[in-house]
Image 1: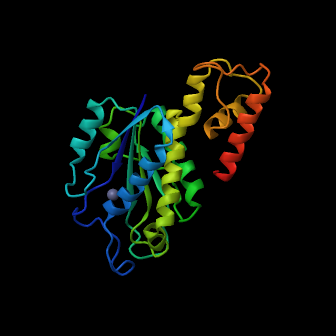
Image 2: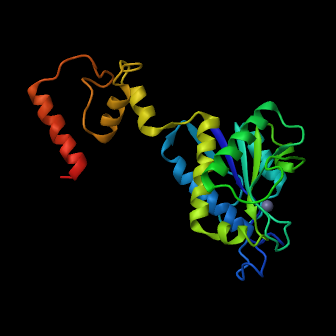
Image 3: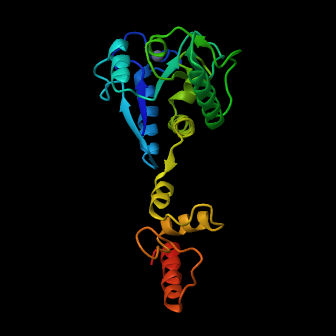
Length: 257
Ligand SMILES: [Zn+2]
């Protein structure tokens, strides 16, 4: 079981943390952006098995949970990975920006490996933007320093960059960002898709068989079943009756009828 702590930075009313008014008249709060991505990460992860996920922030945003409380919770729950999601500031309305993925100044080898995976998956998913000279800096931040497990903090984009703000406010960006982070979590936690995990547990006699992937897919599609609860018998012949059932299931899968 891979235990993930997902941390949407700050809270709804944290002073300061919001988009620059001249670029976003609504002054969208950072937690809203962080939380939107984290929510999407959670729903995308639903397709996977073998993990548990706990949010370190208050899902309603009402309370800005103190950093110490967030890391204490992570340490107590003996989590395997801490991922903190933020949006950056410091451009002052200029055009620079881009994602920054941070590990602790004295990060473990495992944390550095995770930092690289998160940064690569994230930038692949959202596309390259910004002008950061170093997209993977090491910094002495509380959630990176006080966590006992590998930890990474990602700043998805700048809330005061003329280039980043329209991007990070969009639903499309949040979706891509979440996809990238899920790819990273799948890689770090070696997570498997639910169907694959189920079929692997289900049929003990298909591992390494040339038709393994086809069997898993067709079982997931509801086209073909095993010979009993745990065996598929991949090298046994089929009868005319079984072919009829399989063909009917294929038609049902394709046409829905
Ligand atoms: Zn932040």
